[in-house]
Structure formats: C-alpha cells, structure tokens
Amino acid sequence: MIFKKLIVGQLGTNCYIFGSDKTKEVVVIDPGGNAEAIINSVDELNGKPIAVLLTHGHFDHTTKVGKILRHFQIPLMFNKKEYDSGTFKQKEANRWLVEGDIIKIGEINLLTLETPGHSPGSLCFYTSDVDKFKGNEISGIVFTGDLLFRGSIGRSDFPGGNQNLLFESIRKKIMYNKGINDNFIVCPGHMGLSTVGEERANNMFKKFFL
Image (cartoon, rainbow, N blue to C red; front, top):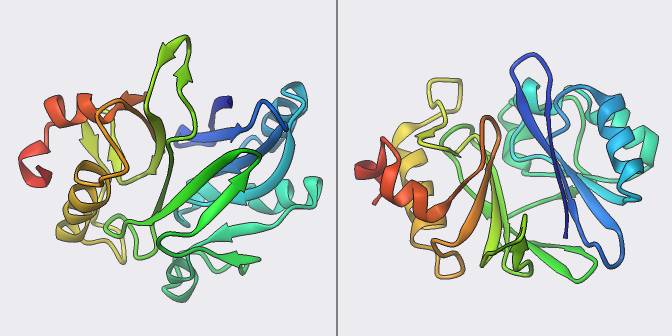
C-alpha cells in the first residue's frame, strides 16, 4: 500500500495519503493545512489522486480542501450531515458518503462507517485489503478522525457533539465491528498511530466503550 502521514495546520492535524502501490491511485484524507506539502508528497509518491475524503468538517481538517481539489481536479467526499448541520458549509460533496459505502482505490476497498459523536456527520474509513505496515503483518487499517485517539477519545463539547453517541460509535463501529480486529492499525486525526488492540487494553476511556 501507499501510506503517508503528514502533520498539518495550526492544530497538528494528521492528513493521510493512502492507496494502492499497484495502481498508484490514492485518496487524500483531511487536508487541514500545508497544501504544498500535501501536493509535493503525492508527487513524490507518484500517486494518482482520485478523491479527497473528510472524516468530518472542522476547520483543522478542511482548510486546504479547495486547493487540493483544484490542483488535482478530483471529487470531494464526506457525509451530508456535516453540511446540513453547518459544521462544514464551504463546499458540497461530489459524493455524499453514508454507512457501508465503498471507495475503490485500485484493488483496495475502503469502507465507510458513520460514527457521530465528535460531530453529527463524522466518518471513519477502514479496509482489510492491506496486510503489511512498516514490515509488520496487520489485519487492516482504520482511519478514525477525531473519534478515537491513541490512549484517548475526541472531544464532544463542540456544537453537534454528543459524548454518549461518541462512546456508542467507538463501541459498535470499531470495537465490536466483525470486520475489524485487534490487529488493525488505528490512524487518528491527531497524535500518534495505535492499534485497536492497544486501545482496547490501554485507552483511558475504555470502560465507557467496551
């Protein structure tokens, strides 16, 4: 697979370039700043961008959406609840994503999860079509946005946030999702990477979502 994490913007948001090393197709997830660095990274990876995906619409994940879309001439995909709630009104999606939608990136099927709690239309994306990460065998990868962090969880005190919904989303969509196991890499919207197993064992809020 193609995988690169860039830390962008004033709040240290994780922007991911993810895709197929066979076809070189990639998606850009959460371009929240430093557009030139994102563009240069795509070029260095010989990537062929097919879409911008948003886990949610907060400014630190979306600031450079327009610049990336214009540069690569690619579609924008996110959840309409972010638009309808006013969380992200700057652009309508070319494709509104809902639970179960699949984004095809070469041979990789990236599945969509609706995971409200941090914001009304928060999404996570996961796939089991990758089996190696930095030389280690894995079962898959999940991009959690600001739902689940390494050792912690996302905030729920912003407009449209709901802590009970956030815990329910982690519980039902990540921890007890039959398609996701402990050997999935967790790629959050901020801070370092983790695994589902590590969060099941060590997350400070685990009693609320297990």
